[in-house]
Image: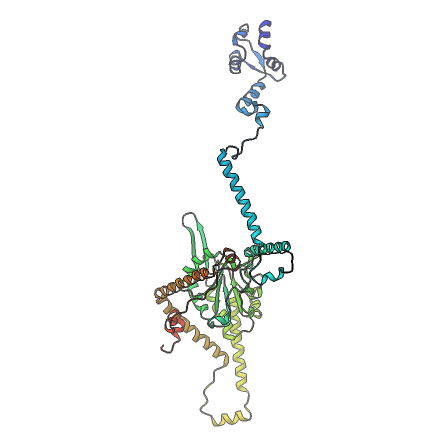
Length: 474
């Protein structure tokens, strides 16, 4: 038996050590034969001296260690092989591919260097005068810095300080007031899902609202969406171009991480500008000009656009000198209800003042005139009622025009479409004549081309239903 044990333990001393460990478990001879055969230990014939029912004490911890090493072959590799870095994709390229890769890098480096040098070229405008007294290298550095600043300015500032054309170069607007309207969650609401993609819903009353305000304001739709997205929406929302001015994300400012609509760059008097927006960040620079619009999220019972019309038409009706003195008073209130309450109180006050004025006795020449004209004097209308009658007449005219507008919508859409096609052709021709470069397009925007004039007053009245209603033939 001793010779057999020595024969077993010589090539595998670890087995003999494991047999002497304190934690032990018992296995029979058949199990021991299977373990020895699995790990290529000496043949079971070396254990033939063991009795058939002899129990051999054995620690099975080495089995777990051997099993772990067998299931993770990386641990059995030498450290040099294990830690060897993998080859990159460049190392696996063919010599021709490596050469092409290097040439591409050289071309990109040379192009970047050439662009940097070219950006320091002299300006073709009066802007160059501020660099004429500097040496060549300093002037080049200044021009490079100026053009780099202009490039960043393109992404954070509007392309121009005058986003709208001068009013003197345009036909007279319906009133001296400018109404700036937001698009998202003010006039429409957009949603997206996997089945239908993007879906747009119009706020209740939006068609009548746009038609109404277009006849009493100079209207501008100012959205924070990019032009290539918002223009497609506006073509569906306003197919006849009732709102001639449309400003997009490119005309906004980026201030402290927020997108801001700076209406001071509209080229209009701020005392006559009103902005309607559902996002307070948009009008954070001019909150005194803002009407806070409740965000709309597909509520079919919403009536805000219709309810706000009496408040909006009060500005041209009462000829408000400065909207910034009126709008802050309604900042924290429900504007339609607050204005309705104010107008009711104002009517009572005006009626009381009128009655008190009638009760005062007339003196001097006024009493003499009333004596000769007794029996012929009709009851006079109070001034405040004249204002209300004037508003009612205006509303009736707009309502009649709106019905005619809906009836003739297909014909008017075709006329407007042809007019827009002619305008786009003029823009393209203007860009070709001026040879507008990519840099000028990024820093100055698209060349301003006026809308094409219609051939006669008759065609003009067809495009403006309100003008047609007010014509003498009606």
